[in-house]
Length: 291
Ligand code: PAF
Image (cartoon, rainbow, N blue to C red; front, top):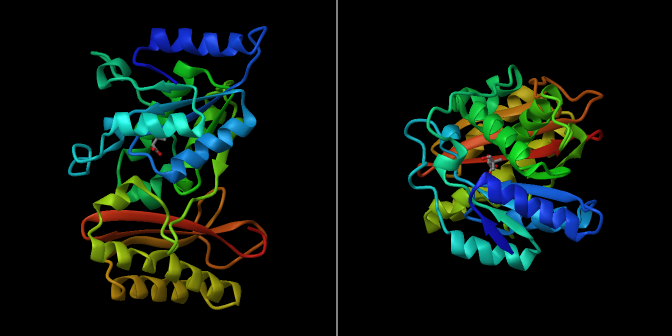
């Protein structure tokens, strides 16, 4: 696996990959990450390898998606370990730009998707999705992949990226070429996340309350219990199970992310963000027969 750090060498390396497949026609999949890789990321790489001739992964801890007081400085950086993991998963090229390469002096542009990012995580993390949309747009333009792979754990992020790709006429990849990959979970159900490593041993055990209580709430909603009351019980169960606060626990339309009072015809999703010992965990699961 080759590692490149400048846009120029990246473009050359991607061209080489494509032509290595003969006639310049090989397909390229991009897996954007911020590093601190775990099996969830490697699942994205393995999934990408099933669909494309070559997989390019990016590792870039994007400062513009962190708010003041968030964990930008503490975010784990472990390029050597990540590189070895990517090789094992079948990645052909690693794009690891510096902050200066991504945002050269004078950089003054921003992609803002309106509507979708205003709720849920966007309400708690102002500007977060502007940073995500901007860097993902840049990554698409830099790598020019045929398709890209993101984890469904960041459900709202996936919706924002699909919207951005469709709205900006990003041909490579088109919105339909953005693949969402189901969340990979630990044995006790906790969604894999680079931030899980911030949890103390005790809080790591308590964190499993999140997926467990979400499943419980889903079972109640699916059996016809009233949504508002069930979400209130879910919040109480999380606080009782050791979480310090709940940013949101909502039933939402899976595509528009608008809040739902009841299950309807369209696919629905339960989305939760909650804090434990200073760590913010998010999770989401499908709800109902149309999920
Ligand atoms: O999900 C992430 O790791 C990041 O938000 C992404 C998509 C790589 C953009 O920085």
